[in-house]
Length: 312
Image (cartoon, rainbow, N blue to C red):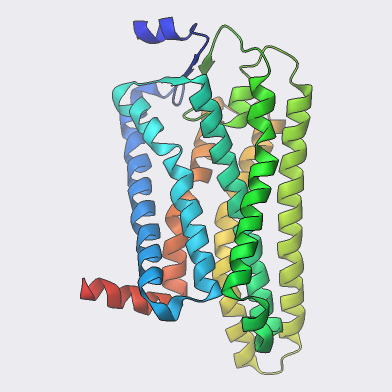
């Protein structure tokens, strides 16, 4: 520990403490971390491999699943390896540049993930409300353009965060009570005036989440209106079943994320351990559950996975 006490005053280094107050349980906490991460990688790489090998799955819906899988691979990968180094080897040091880089990519991928969910809602809207023009409106080329637009949006929105933070002086005590360089945790290390940075972070949270959730709600409002006009109960069930999977994925993503952000911003009486655990749940659980949800709920994908697995 002496080495970390020395490096905490190093102007080029931060110290990530893991989960303060639960240091004695770090080894036990690492077990679900590693397990969720391995399951997430296996599930998402399997999805990517199956869709890549099966020509019949080269459709917008499954290409969107591949985009989602890529964000689900990237999100925990930016966090879990460093967290496991803290839990297993007590390697808590991280350079300021490395910390700001982790913060940028972590939040950039999160915004990209949200953009993919919006595009998936649009995909379901076209498939149900305008099925005859589905292939024309949402071609693979147009889907690639939407994915690129989502990536550019994520980079442009998130890039100012590390740039604003990097312009401020950091306090002498450079200990971050967290497993990761989350924006709010890093901002608390700044000794200068962070009013602009804090306002930008809050506006960003409400603009991105508010805009994306509004577009998703609008898509599903139009879907519900179209479904209610259908007289056949069987058609009702088929139309709604195509949306159930996407709704489950949205709930696993937005619910812990919004709750974590709200508790960070407005709840001062909550234990720091709770903040850190919520932040990690937000990053670990959705990437693990998404391929499982789609594998169970999507028959065509489930059949192809079974066929590919048996062949192997």
